Length: 370
Image (cartoon, rainbow, N blue to C red; front, side, top):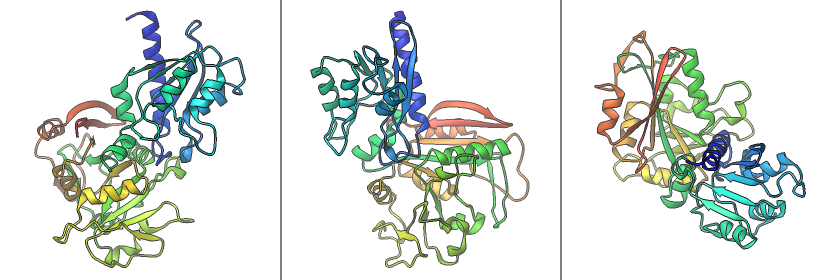
């Protein structure tokens, strides 16, 4: 690998980190990262990522941070971006327009956008303007960061994560309405970070009754990143639970149930026709309804029954397992018969990462061909 190629890879990795910053806050738009750099001096001129609500886009944000569009700081330089710049005409100039106006010499992009209103137009506009465009650097990494956007467009469903918190014997606490913590304070903070990176969080009505979770993000500075909430099942006496508390209509709350004409609390919406005809919920229909409502990333936090249903349907992209170093207190129920790595390997998942969060061990398993 030449020094120039190494520099390109380094810059694209920074752009990918920028893209991750926006996860959970940009739907239905994808979270994109962009870096403007000087290949001659090695200077990073500016970094940008898609802003909350999906605008400004990462490319314009990087240009803004680097100075006005007419500034010489970007002229003749290279932009590294994780997804193809938009080029479809709308109410404001496109990213491709802004990049062209800024006088960029080269654009290195990881991934083409499958959105039919983009689909190569961004690259073509830049090339027509004399900008060198190179596509495909770290495309697999970019495809994973952008997977929710891609799946929503190509399979009419969001990216699906399952999060498990287990004790050292791979058991969970049997809830009775009172909080029972299996993992550490640090582990719980990590779980809240996962919530901040999700567009919506899903649990079953049984989990509401047993644990009464708030389903929000309570990390300092990220309270506004609490995801929308999806409750599966019949609410009944769970209508008083904390998860149904909102402020000014945020976050959105949906109930998915096989019951026709289901009555839901004020401020809560029924999630369309998702019945499987057998008294249960058809998960692919549920995911399609969420995708139609702009959800690109779904975090499943329900119990073993919910996890098993999604896994059996082949609808899970990533499983995140946090394992505490000790046995849990109180009534515990073993949910994995073997260590997580062996269990999920049999289901077609590959080990993607592992690290410590406080005393807890976090393991991440992915199925990229799902």
